[in-house]
Image 1 (cartoon, protein in one colour):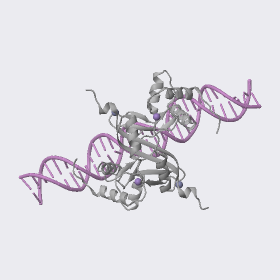
Image 2: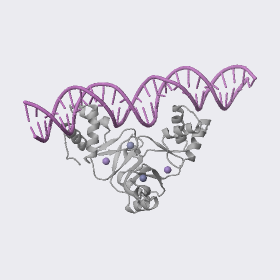
Image 3: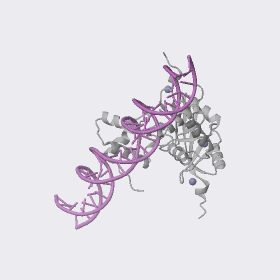
Image 4: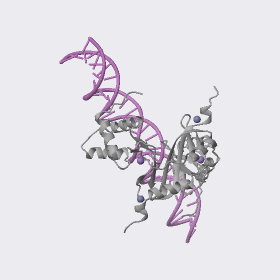
Length: 130
Length: 130
DNA sequence: AATAGTATTTAGACTTAGTATAAATTTAAT
DNA sequence: ATTAAATTTATACTAAGTCTAAATACTATT
Ligand SMILES: [Mn+2]
Ligand SMILES: [Mn+2]
Ligand SMILES: [Zn+2]
Ligand SMILES: [Zn+2]
């Protein structure tokens, strides 16, 4: 409701996340900030992550691990986790609308959102070159 | 790999979960055990939940809340969470195989499993009778 | 520019969910 | 009965995140 206020800390964290091609946890983000010479308070990182998430500039991913991950891609998409090495990849195809309609009909819910996490074995883990 | 060993505690907890028509958290399970006159150590409840999950007798659900929930239904199914009241309902229709094939092809993963959580507004929350 | 008011950051205490450890107890095997 | 293995118990500990109150930094107004 209130206008966007990107402080130095928030902007730095946003830039970092947007420049990632992976999906770091809060702890990983703090580590990378430190490596880039920044030193923000622990709580500030969490506050900023929440702020940026609420502002819709990043997405919080709950993939069933102990810690949330953060994603600079804000358009709707899903994820697949490799059970061998833990890597997280993007899934850009959306669940068929027909299926969602069916779920809404059967459950009597207004379905607003779906989160999907696939699990499997990634290409590198499937084809280990010695 | 080793044969099933259902101790009193494990059996009691399994029975409790199987008799539930909801998806209780560990804390809720402990509360219900206490109400039924049982007093197991905190750690035993967690150990039993893990044991029963590993044995495939119950399922652990990670719905993106802070605590895991447990489910006596072991056949593959999904869940929908009401964002107003927090209730969790069953979703019995599976994601279309065609979509999963597409995801596997595009990501180069062997897809073994998918976890899906829908969010929406349940019937009671949508039609509040005064 | 000075002042007051609001928002943010900081350090650190606290919470919640769950795991680890070591002693005590139970169960199973000889 | 004795020994060994598995389980339970009590309790300490960990990890991820929230909360709080004081210190700083912005904003608006005079
Ligand atoms: Mn992503
Ligand atoms: Mn269920
Ligand atoms: Zn892998
Ligand atoms: Zn509801």
